[in-house]
Length: 117
Image (tube, rainbow, N blue to C red; front, top):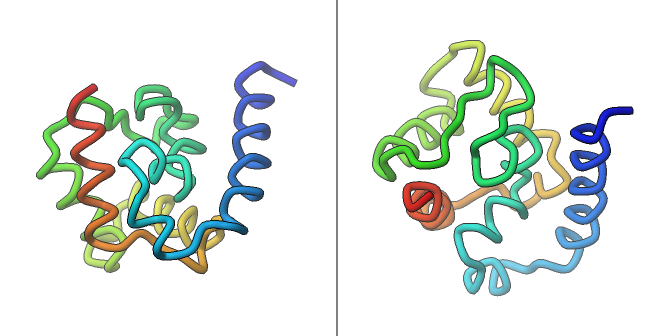
Protein backbone atom coordinates (compact mmCIF):
# COMPACT_ATOMS: atom_id res chain seq x y z
CA UNK A 1 0.00 0.00 0.00
CA UNK A 2 1.44 3.36 -1.00
CA UNK A 3 1.85 6.31 1.35
CA UNK A 4 -0.69 8.21 -0.73
CA UNK A 5 -3.26 5.44 -0.24
CA UNK A 6 -2.63 5.36 3.49
CA UNK A 7 -3.03 9.13 3.77
CA UNK A 8 -6.23 9.03 1.70
CA UNK A 9 -7.68 6.26 3.86
CA UNK A 10 -6.72 8.06 7.07
CA UNK A 11 -8.35 11.26 5.81
CA UNK A 12 -11.51 9.31 5.02
CA UNK A 13 -11.64 7.83 8.51
CA UNK A 14 -11.13 11.25 10.08
CA UNK A 15 -13.79 12.73 7.83
CA UNK A 16 -16.29 10.05 8.78
CA UNK A 17 -15.87 10.86 12.45
CA UNK A 18 -16.02 14.60 11.79
CA UNK A 19 -19.02 14.41 9.45
CA UNK A 20 -21.10 12.62 12.03
CA UNK A 21 -20.90 15.55 14.45
CA UNK A 22 -20.96 18.60 12.15
CA UNK A 23 -24.33 20.35 12.05
CA UNK A 24 -25.24 23.19 9.68
CA UNK A 25 -24.40 25.64 12.46
CA UNK A 26 -21.01 23.99 12.92
CA UNK A 27 -20.33 24.18 9.17
CA UNK A 28 -21.19 27.89 9.12
CA UNK A 29 -18.27 28.46 11.51
CA UNK A 30 -15.77 26.39 9.51
CA UNK A 31 -13.00 27.92 7.46
CA UNK A 32 -12.58 27.15 3.76
CA UNK A 33 -9.79 24.75 4.63
CA UNK A 34 -11.98 22.89 7.13
CA UNK A 35 -14.85 22.73 4.64
CA UNK A 36 -12.45 21.39 1.98
CA UNK A 37 -11.77 18.45 4.31
CA UNK A 38 -15.35 18.10 5.58
CA UNK A 39 -16.80 17.81 2.08
CA UNK A 40 -14.11 15.29 1.07
CA UNK A 41 -12.53 17.57 -1.55
CA UNK A 42 -9.14 16.66 -0.09
CA UNK A 43 -9.71 12.98 -0.86
CA UNK A 44 -9.53 13.62 -4.63
CA UNK A 45 -7.76 16.97 -5.04
CA UNK A 46 -5.17 16.23 -2.35
CA UNK A 47 -3.70 18.51 0.29
CA UNK A 48 -4.38 22.14 -0.52
CA UNK A 49 -5.87 21.08 -3.86
CA UNK A 50 -2.38 20.47 -5.24
CA UNK A 51 -2.03 16.67 -5.33
CA UNK A 52 -4.87 15.08 -7.32
CA UNK A 53 -5.32 11.32 -7.14
CA UNK A 54 -6.07 10.99 -10.87
CA UNK A 55 -5.36 12.75 -14.15
CA UNK A 56 -9.11 13.46 -14.29
CA UNK A 57 -8.91 15.49 -11.11
CA UNK A 58 -7.49 18.98 -11.60
CA UNK A 59 -5.11 20.87 -9.37
CA UNK A 60 -7.25 23.65 -7.96
CA UNK A 61 -5.05 25.20 -5.28
CA UNK A 62 -3.94 28.66 -6.34
CA UNK A 63 -6.57 29.12 -9.06
CA UNK A 64 -8.80 32.19 -9.17
CA UNK A 65 -11.59 31.96 -6.57
CA UNK A 66 -14.31 32.97 -9.03
CA UNK A 67 -13.18 30.27 -11.48
CA UNK A 68 -13.17 27.56 -8.79
CA UNK A 69 -16.55 28.66 -7.49
CA UNK A 70 -18.09 28.84 -10.97
CA UNK A 71 -16.83 25.41 -12.04
CA UNK A 72 -17.75 23.69 -8.76
CA UNK A 73 -21.23 25.22 -8.79
CA UNK A 74 -21.88 24.18 -12.39
CA UNK A 75 -20.65 20.65 -11.75
CA UNK A 76 -22.73 20.20 -8.60
CA UNK A 77 -25.83 21.57 -10.35
CA UNK A 78 -25.30 19.11 -13.21
CA UNK A 79 -24.70 21.86 -15.77
CA UNK A 80 -21.63 20.18 -17.25
CA UNK A 81 -21.03 16.58 -18.25
CA UNK A 82 -17.29 16.26 -18.76
CA UNK A 83 -15.53 13.19 -17.36
CA UNK A 84 -14.08 15.41 -14.62
CA UNK A 85 -17.55 16.70 -13.75
CA UNK A 86 -19.01 13.19 -13.59
CA UNK A 87 -16.22 12.12 -11.26
CA UNK A 88 -16.74 15.09 -8.92
CA UNK A 89 -20.52 14.75 -8.87
CA UNK A 90 -20.18 11.05 -8.07
CA UNK A 91 -17.60 11.72 -5.33
CA UNK A 92 -19.89 14.25 -3.64
CA UNK A 93 -22.92 11.97 -3.96
CA UNK A 94 -21.13 9.10 -2.23
CA UNK A 95 -19.19 11.17 0.30
CA UNK A 96 -19.54 10.55 4.01
CA UNK A 97 -20.86 14.11 4.14
CA UNK A 98 -23.44 13.57 1.38
CA UNK A 99 -26.24 14.44 3.78
CA UNK A 100 -24.63 17.88 3.82
CA UNK A 101 -23.54 18.80 0.30
CA UNK A 102 -21.68 22.10 0.09
CA UNK A 103 -23.89 25.16 0.04
CA UNK A 104 -23.15 28.14 -2.19
CA UNK A 105 -21.62 29.94 0.81
CA UNK A 106 -19.44 26.93 1.60
CA UNK A 107 -18.24 26.64 -2.00
CA UNK A 108 -17.37 30.33 -1.86
CA UNK A 109 -15.34 29.86 1.35
CA UNK A 110 -13.52 26.86 -0.10
CA UNK A 111 -12.76 28.72 -3.33
CA UNK A 112 -11.49 31.78 -1.46
CA UNK A 113 -9.17 29.61 0.65
CA UNK A 114 -7.86 27.67 -2.35
CA UNK A 115 -7.15 30.89 -4.24
CA UNK A 116 -4.74 31.99 -1.51
CA UNK A 117 -2.47 28.96 -1.92
